[in-house]
Length: 142
Image (cartoon, rainbow, N blue to C red):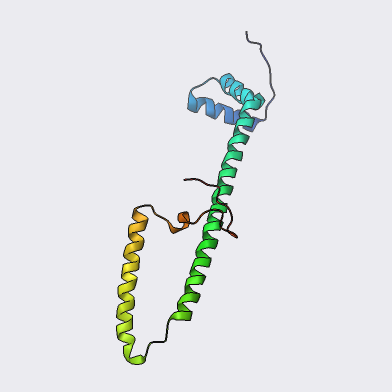
């Protein structure tokens, strides 16, 4: 059963309804009915809010993981640099060329190993347990 309802709407809104009706090849009443139904439907708004909340929670967990990984990476680099600087003796001037060649060779090996690990999906950061003291817990599982 249907009942008639007369409305007064702003001219611009009627123009937009007319444009949509022409574009979709639908009667104006069907467009207005769908809009009113959507507006009055509490489920639609609740579902959208729940979807946004889930997405925001997921983004929050991803950011927490990124913060943790960045902290671990920075600390790892700092410890390595400190260790390297404390144990590496200065190179005599006449051995610079040989030391640079050896450094290039070692770096190439490092890059090759890193590439292989990344291709296999291996990650040093994933090897570190989440319960390391001082590291923020990782809540995103892979």
